Length: 280
Image 1 (cartoon, one colour):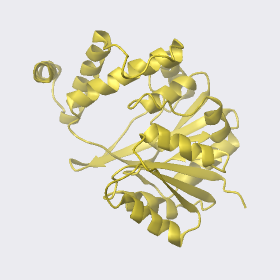
Image 2 (cartoon, one colour; image 1 turned 30 degrees about the vertical axis):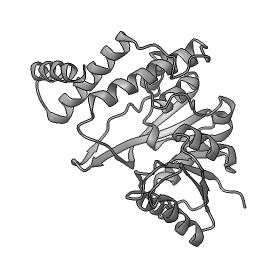
Image 3 (tube, one colour; image 1 turned 120 degrees about the vertical axis):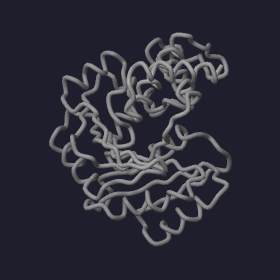
Image 4 (cartoon, helix red, strand yellow; image 1 turned 180 degrees about the horizontal axis):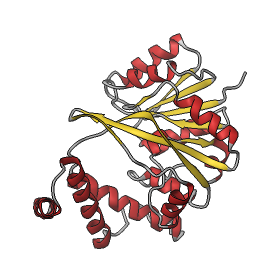
């Protein structure tokens, strides 16, 4: 019997978290699935841990790469070999709640015009947590984010239709960051949904470094050029730095830090200015 859902996991040096990720899939209420773990030439025990699970559960397949290719390449490889009509993203450092696959499967079965469904996230990490996200759940709000080319859904909790993801070419391997954003740009005219239920525990870093925020913003700018303007010849080694993109990233980073720390707008401006001077 073919699986109803293919779960795709790209893993690199995830020895500390991969077991929790895989176990959270095994513990799902919905059991008709396959899990495809693509190990991106890890140098720690990630591969052996994943293979140990596969040895005990035939629903788990492990693909090992001889050299590091990036998460986009790994996800595309998993998508290529997926046997199910639905894809669920499961990052190697996250955990899926027991009802995740069942609820998302039922939604897409009941709503055939929708390409993807996500859910709220429960953020946690070395900093503490959990902290629950508040992604928009109304179709109108999600469509508005799509029109503005903003991120419409939280990617770590997404379930998507396999054929549609393949049709748009999967993830853009040239976007080393913001690959999820590039995928949603390709799906900007598709119907997307987000449940109001927390279905994924999402491991995050706090505080996020301003350098990471800026580089993510630059790759998001690259994604817009490649997808929206058809400039597919622009590659990471050649794409120009954008003062506007950097300014946008810095502003978003400042707002995030304000929310995390519960500080005032004035303090946020000082914090952001200090971070920018250190980054330069």
